[in-house]
Image (cartoon, rainbow, N blue to C red; front, top):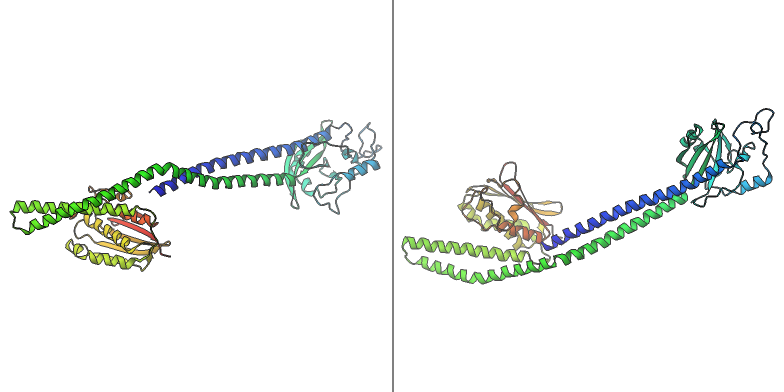
Length: 465
């Protein structure tokens, strides 16, 4: 019982701590990803804004007749110089692989994307630009990348309609975060500038955050299990000590009471051998019967105390053989009360001593005799289920009220209002002993009400290895 309580407390404590770790990890992950994303987008946005605010920029108009290429009315032409071209070529390229057929920079658009420095101290990767005309045609691609994904992006389409927009795209396994902003001249959208940043570094940082949080959660979970187990043991130690003292007292008191009860029983038997008046004989017989009941109660208390002792040694037994032996021993008592016993036994070996199996079977059959009318049929089954040996005893008596399926396994449990008393009245320890013996061997007990009525009690033991 103490061991089960300690395990339950351990699970509660560790579960609460794991929940806190999960909440902490979720909040941390959300905050970090938002911060990194905000920093990344701020870098791209600042770079695009800086480009758009440069006073030398020209509208993305097609060359008009009689004017220089790409020039607006009344604006001087700008011709790319070798220095500008060299600076543009020296700009670091993103990790995208250049396409052989990628368009070369449109000479008419080079003034728009000259290589004047665009500072972005908060960037996590370099920013590069593409320029598109109002009809969506790529005007400038100084890095000669395949811009098909960008050209087809929703962000560019929105920018060409005058609406700045963000989007994450993927091209050949490379993820890009792009910001498309319209180029407005005289109130008209003449094109769009797209600033893009490679997300490789961002993804690496997110993966690192996930790994760290997973290690924190995993390590914290293991530490919480160990700490919770130690804490639960410390908290339950006074209760365990008190329980041990109680068990020792019951065992010692029971041993001390057995001797005087045996003397009383022997004296009553001697008196009954003598000729006694009828009233005296009835009194002596009552003394003998009550003494026998007290002796049985003491035996049950001793057995319950032994069943609740520490972890037992390894054991195994031929369960079907032990069941048949008990039924044979109780045959005369069963016949006197008219109980017929049918059996369906599968030969299995349970991880329990033969004496424990016999005590369980005897307690279950005695429970049927004590709480069902005479002549009630009894069915005993033994089967293998889910790696366990399952012993079931079923009767067709009055059964028990709903909600008392667990109550009947408690000490001194009495449900006489539902169960019809038979020839004997137990002290309510039989099923408690059954549960203690089963749980001591790592098994379990359960009670149910069959559809046909009565009570079905199942006891499971691990199979012998």
